[in-house]
Length: 70
Image (cartoon, rainbow, N blue to C red; front, side, top):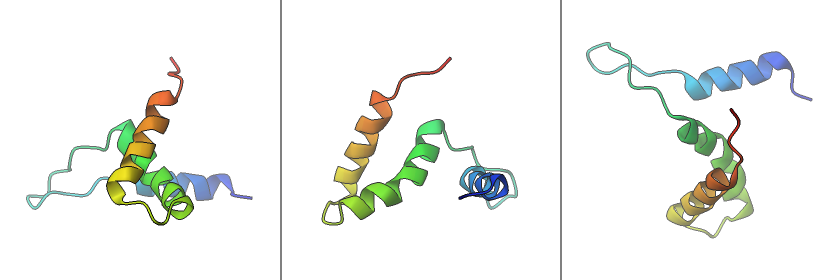
């Protein structure tokens, strides 16, 4: 079972910002990019023969089928 600390560390790694060459922070990832970065390894493992573009289409369909929470 994952501890809360493990989840927080993983989320921090997913959302941490890299710096541009001039030292300013890069623009943060949007919610879909964070979702795709976290979900892509699972989808890729389940569909090892698929190309990257096809996996992106699956991720997009999953994202669009989610209910929006206010």
